[in-house]
Length: 200
Image 1 (cartoon, rainbow, N blue to C red):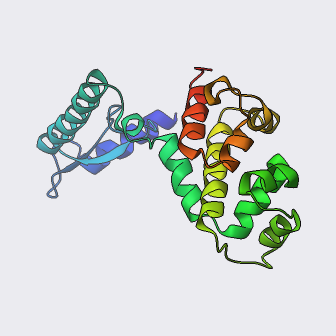
Image 2 (cartoon, rainbow, N blue to C red; image 1 turned 180 degrees about the vertical axis):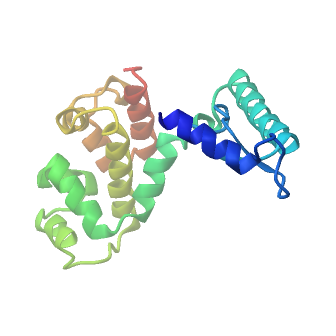
């Protein structure tokens, strides 16, 4: 019954003899353009062909992108290491210290930083101290944070903590926390990359 009324309405809109009104508009059912399946307003034949051509061009472009190596979105995804590095370089000192202290404990963070008193880590994390005077200390902390953020993408916090503690064959059987504390930043990053890629 609904279809009959719709067709009748469409017939009245077009005209009893099937002629197109002066605005050159007709109601037609266009499944390829109307996703709801309802009666759609569209300009008559020439414009209908134009819309179909646009749809076909879009489909061909998408098929070409997939054939050349997948969707553009997958190609444009940023490198995880670059993301971790950017985050480590921009994180405020209090968040940096608090994050490492929570993940690795205050003692481990103290060893990485190379400071004598663990209370210094607490002062950093609470914001009582807002600047690190020794740039080498800050380098070690930010490198440790960068490594932690990357490994946390695929590993649990417990596994990441164990990695920092364990004797690493790529660091001549030295733990990453000791290697970082000794200033072996590049070597520790390379060991972390190997672990993250399943190479260790």
